[in-house]
Picture 1 (cartoon, helix red, strand yellow):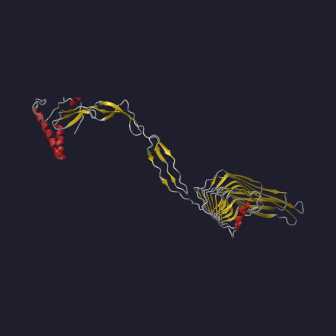
Picture 2 (cartoon, helix red, strand yellow):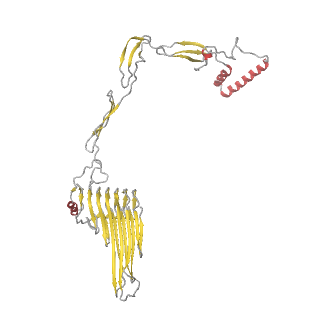
Picture 3 (cartoon, rainbow, N blue to C red):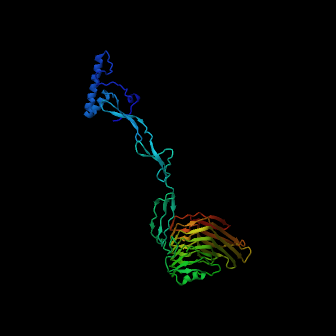
Length: 486
């Protein structure tokens, strides 16, 4: 076992006490020989106990530790050469040794003229010589240039498409040209149609030849002749000034596919109920409605952008510029002998995408918020036979109003829908009595919400904000507002 020692050991000058030693050992003995003998005997006794406890193998090591001090002497001096370090080996009489006094290798001795070796990306360069002493090659330290490594560049490959193969990128050194990553062949990707609209989600290519292209309002109205067909918008279409008849009936709903292909249907105005489709049991996909105006005036009914009744699916669709207006303005004038004004009622259900949803509205968007106005008023005039008659007669208007940004009422599924801005809803109720002989009343019940006005089913992962709702309620009026925050 090799050990490093101090300077006195390396020079061979270390002289310690050896309990095995004989003549010449520099052990100083005291005059109290008896005490020394007792000390030695006690030490040997302890050693014997340790040997017995730890075993015979450990015994020799313990004895050496207590009873032997190394006396190292120079055994070998190895001079340095061009290729190897020099050193001195010290050895004790017990056989233990160590190496110390290392010397750095000598400089090579140049033989003849050097050879200029150019540096590369991976190997050093400089002037190289042969050594006369060791015969090895070496660089002159003053001329050596260390290898800088590769300077990599990427040569773009050819992207694979749905119908053609491609190549991956190639990576190589722009200096030496060594290729680090070879180009590899990439198989064609194939079309993807996860939502069932027959349009590849990667390249937007129509994957089916069964579709009929829609390029005009008349083409769009022609869907009524085949409610089971497949249709795709070929361009944006305006319905301004078109007397639109909602598509589909309860007995014969739309069961086909209408794919907007990213195009818009603009300027939809519904003032007497209805929607683009009255009954939808098919698929409406990727259609944009831009500029949607929905209104009812003194009438009851259901009005929507895409479908009055949705029992199919509306997915990936968008509405922008949504405006809703519901106005009820009822008046009554009575005279002898029919003094009582009685009551009238009305109800309206509005939805941006569906008035009544029993199907699925998925991944749809309301852009730019929406504006909703519901104004209800009543007027009563009683003409008595005698001017002093005041019998407490009355006239009452009762109204129910439902609005939901995606569905008026939801009994189906609304999933992953988004409203990008805050909507505004204005609700007013007023009542006017012409004289003291009769009184006008107004009772309004309103269910409103960005997702749905009324919800009895599933709404998941939608991102919307509560609308800003303003209320104005006059004398002899009630305005009951229920906000659905789902």
